[in-house]
Image (cartoon, rainbow, N blue to C red; front, side):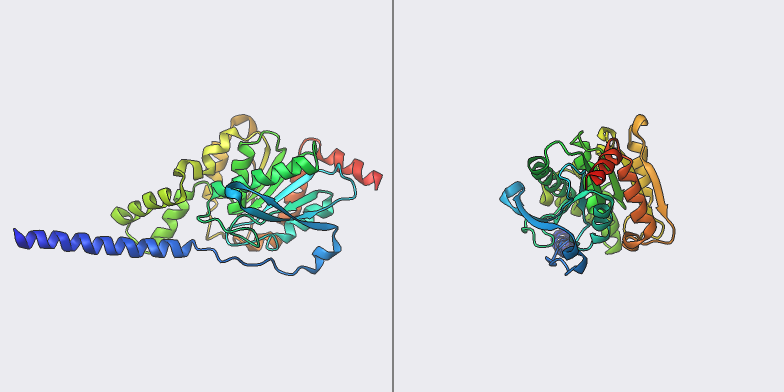
Length: 302
């Protein structure tokens, strides 16, 4: 009996140590080191300014504002992906600015030179988009707003659009459908057994982030999106499989099904500089209700 008790205690202790190590490895995988925005010569050829404004938890966001001569031009919010920053999504921001949009190129919390506020989540990113939208309403009241995002930024953009019916359109590049599914992929990749340790890690992660996984799943919000939606997938995406975009499309309401596009031969990041991606995002957002007419009008006035 004493031997059996000792064996059980040893198993529990070893299991606890294994779980602690697995959790530490899990946290390290999601650790973000602030990477300053790269120097972009093209940025200085654009009329721009750097905005600093508050988001949740009294943190400050740093965002590039790319201006148009006409203050009535439509607004594009551009949201980068995990561990990235505004300079990484510069090709998208620049393409939209050239097309006639006033662009707000975000650095979410824990990214670029914005304030640190761990842990990061898609829900927290959606809050940062909402904070940016409040600034837009102050500086450009009444201007129509669209969203373009990549990966985590695309997923947060879908949540943001679902919670804000005034958004005209969203182009989501490689969005995921569920944070939980992404975490499961990472746990398996780390060769941690799902039972029991993987499931315990998921429960700990949920409490660590502070939101249930349902609130961290863009697929949950798809039925609420009224904005015109484009879902773009990369054929060779090893980070966010195209099946996730299928799940998002299926969850959308029957009267607002997303347009779909798969970029052949592209990876999770290579599609961001491809002509097909940039042209598709630009054309789609310009086609949103009232946008093309507003751009044409502002250019006639220049």
